[in-house]
Image (cartoon, rainbow, N blue to C red):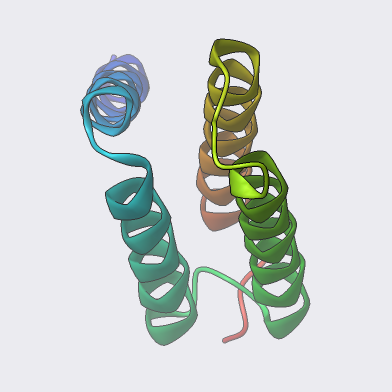
Length: 104
């Protein structure tokens, strides 16, 4: 019973985080994800390797943003692609922070 409540509450928090990210500006999303990664390292939820992988994913998204802005216009298709990349990164952060590995 307690396990179900924990899983449901974690699911709710995760969904709220996704909704909040969807409404935030892309720059703020990037900052929030960086903050989540740093917090995961500080708390021991993320190993050095996991943090490196997540940071690498953020760099890749940043490159996507630069390419999208290079011609001066970010198309609707590019915006959708960037949002999908950020959503995938958010899921990865959550998964890596909540797996059984830790640096302690």
